[in-house]
Image (cartoon, rainbow, N blue to C red; front, side, top):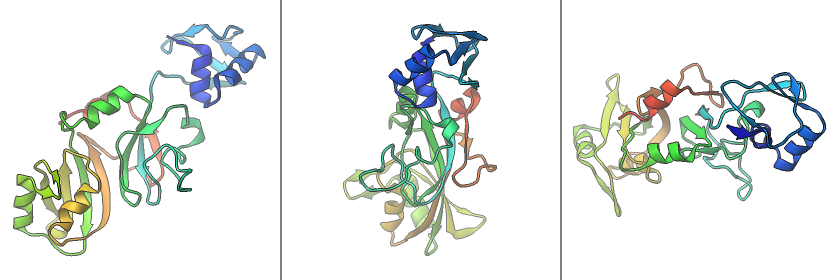
Length: 237
């Protein structure tokens, strides 16, 4: 149960004072009845909220799968660098307060980006102690070999960073196209891992978080909501 002014503020991405003004002006209806009390609490399972003639689907938290495109940063605010963020490119009807990317992808890395406003869930899947795997496809400038596969599987050291054991496989027998599964999220980790063997990553795409694969129906820049079953798949090792 949440206050109606808070719900409107979150779902329409407006200030709480603006939400109260909408309520006072008679533009808010609950179950077909005009509601004038900003403190009224609504049940997301039962109540129907209508604001300015539009039904508002309200949930305590949202979980969004985005197919992140190149050139977009994994942040909530790109004003300092004048760059677009993954939150900026969300469809207008998906935007609400407090959304953030759960984890990061480099600016030119594409693929599965989870955007949510549930800090507890994000912490759970990103915490190193939970070791939720992330799967990537990397295009390389030169092939890797069995020695690199073995080193990845044993865990390598990059500078002062200790990498957990990772899975490295060739895709369809092509040793210049790698599938990599890691359980960490260090800065430029996969690129740095290959770089330590003199191999450059040309393209990088995240295709899976936990056991949930990126929806192949989503073009770059597109997104959709996730359901409870899919959230459980993300949180699976």
